[in-house]
Image (cartoon, rainbow, N blue to C red; front, side):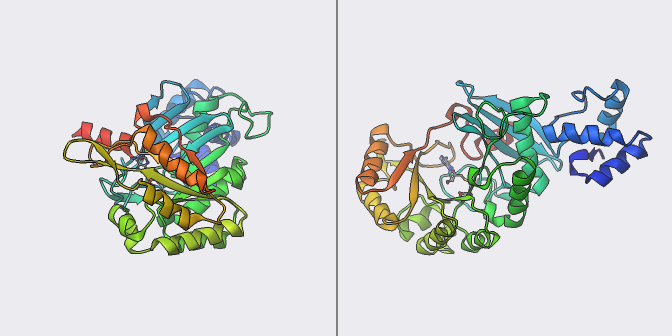
Length: 366
Ligand code: SAH
């Protein structure tokens, strides 16, 4: 079995190198390449060629390997399908924006939450990701952005800097079912890549004890709640987790977190439609009444509602709403003083929504 060098501590990497009868300084050189996200040993230009091929035989660089890479037509979004050591697959997305380079990180292989509109959960949960497996997703993005270019001289976060500047834990999986590793991962991202807490967002379907744990941890990150319905009855129909943690409990924990850290709470709200017998699309969670109920829940709190047009998933029975319906919903929120944003559909052309690529690949394998 090949050794994954990124998973070794500095001491272990030195031992690995000296066991191959190599001088110690090779360990330091290799570590630098690993931290840049080197996908294999061939790119490590300051190592002799025979050493590179030797390393290729006995070792691997990162705990994730790129299986597929898709580029959106506007070249602003790159989506990676990654394979882990045990053959599980995860997705990770790099979004180049005017404010920096954001990476959407997966926290689990698969998902156990069972939300009725989502592709990630269709094959169930396989397992939690390790700290290294989450961190390696940033390194894949880092290599994509910078390759073997040397260290930046500009401060991190400058869009021209070309390094990862923002993290959203919004990929496959429920981060607050893997809280300890997610916290470990974010500590490292802050520490080693200098990504400030305010440029980090963790999104949850509403695991109240997990939100409380984040609160105890105390870092001023951004919290996002996947709400998707303005009352318990409707929310329980599309998000089974709502049977365990009710909407008001979730919002209370979330408001407590965001006011303690002086952050705006992000509310994610997918607009879902359903087709009637004649094939016309009706609002499912997006009528005027739903919008007004949402206003009542959020009034007086520092929130931003991210309105998300549903990315259609073949296996799911919902339908996407028209642009008009989306704007009507948004107008009601705005008129009632609630901040909103319509999420741009980044990379919709490359199946960038939650688990679509992994699912498609699994189907093709069969
Ligand atoms: N489990 C976490 C993070 C992963 S999902 C959470 O629930 O927040 C990231 C966001 O994408 C969530 O708001 C999720 O509900 C939403 N999402 C899932 N499937 C989608 C789809 N088909 N179209 C648009 N958004 C989707």
